[in-house]
Length: 443
Image 1 (tube, one colour):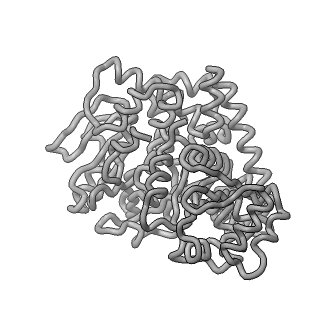
Image 2 (cartoon, helix red, strand yellow; image 1 turned 90 degrees about the vertical axis):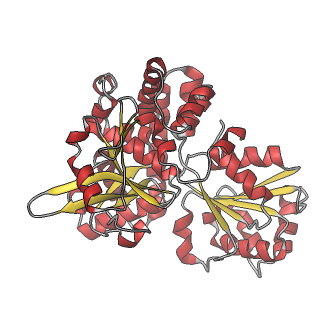
Image 3 (cartoon, helix red, strand yellow; image 1 turned 180 degrees about the vertical axis):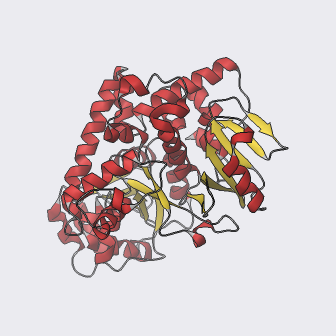
């Protein structure tokens, strides 16, 4: 599978300011696969040190953490040479050995020519137990396949290039094809193993079985969250969040029989594990948006739209055949999709706007920051005249000069209303905050 992370890893490999790299991401999003492929194709030697499967290797990171001594010990354990400039040393599941995280700073200071990557699904959980090497490491994040990566995995690279281009009107036949592909993505999702199962068999049911297995894996991980939270509470909150995508979260509604502090702790731990993403309400009067993030008013997303399908138990025979993608699961599927794309395209935390007034309330689904400008975003069908919250936001915040509406209608720019209607499948490129997407085609 081609992944955008391939391009980012190559940039890291060639950087003059390279530091040991930590790749973050939820379990099963493809971290090990991507790094293994990168190491085996771009380096003379690739060494994998899995600290979860090999707890005996933790002893290597005891003592004074001298980088050269660590490498010497690993050479003996793995029966391979470690040669700076030719070897990629990959420390997987590094959270299982917090001392190994501390050791990363010494690789940077003592062996800067050695390429070192670390990854771990519950990396943030280990942070409280160590002195973190601030300024001595770099970070990248890996997420489930976005819609463009999904299309490429299916061999539809030209379709992938279309949706990564500047949003524009496309022919009716192309529009219908992309909408139908997006419908499938809504249910298959972007977890690599789920996509692989569908591509190889053509069966959605096969991908659904993979989704069930991944959720079971997440639940098995809950034992590692203790003593911070009860596994039954974690499971309840996980299911409740999946059912409430697009809605303001209130802890008291996430599970009966648990106190608000207990539910909040479970929610925060699932966020740390990157299984759910918190989307706070902010004031869009200026940047950075996070400076005004509300601790009390927020929504949440699932890590993957396919896992959301599994956890909600939505009836496939009813939801899949709804003609408008915006109506699937009361519109929550489309809002999850756009948010999931924006988590990658914005490459930072994402936010929304909510006004709570005595006389009325208003809300826009998301806020995107592109080239220093803030764009309110709605995910809905309908005419420009029905977008009351969008127009209120544009009126109240003069620095928000234009709004985007993602729907299944064709592309349409309405300059008099300061609104652009954009097909859902352009969600990534329309909200992309980087410099250029062209380089990703070379990966």
